[in-house]
Length: 274
Image (cartoon, rainbow, N blue to C red; front, side):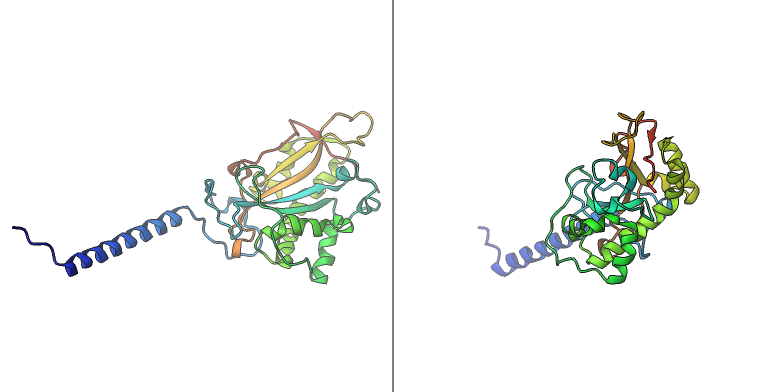
């Protein structure tokens, strides 16, 4: 006749088995995350696009603290913005020092249109010195664009308001330095994606693949150019691998499924009003 196993031995086996399972599962999870997570940048501001290969994260693998995959820095070609039905806005009544102007810095997900927005955050209260610097690159502040961008996008970044707008300003300064001179020279004329990317690469190798171009027809297009596409925005792709989910490494936009829209093989650059 078989004797039943003592209760103490059975309990000990159960406990040891549970410990082994927990240890195995923890190691498996840590290894899986470690294999996919990009290295953390300790450098403030953008890292050149050709410093490392960027792995494309899969849906659901969010590296940012607020649950998003990367950022889009969106810069408007200000003359085109004003010629597209906004000529009455305060920022369109005077010449601007930087016509490649900040629209926003948007947390984005790989799935287009599935971006976080309207997150809870403190009221915008920018450092006065930062606000003064930002206004030079963000003329829409005259129409409270910065308030809208903070509520709609910035609050979802997980960053403080000053930190968020400082990153936007630093990134904008780099693209402005790379493209603004060429865009100003081309104002009123045709150009191509290749020409603008070549100008960016001449400034910083690899920079041309880190942005996309957005074009459309303008409501107030000059005679002879109606129905032609005009450059509206330049959108740069940046990883959220900086400190605490801040913008870090510049990305190849094709690797995060972002491409030019509406520009075709050639498009026009709206002229600058003086």
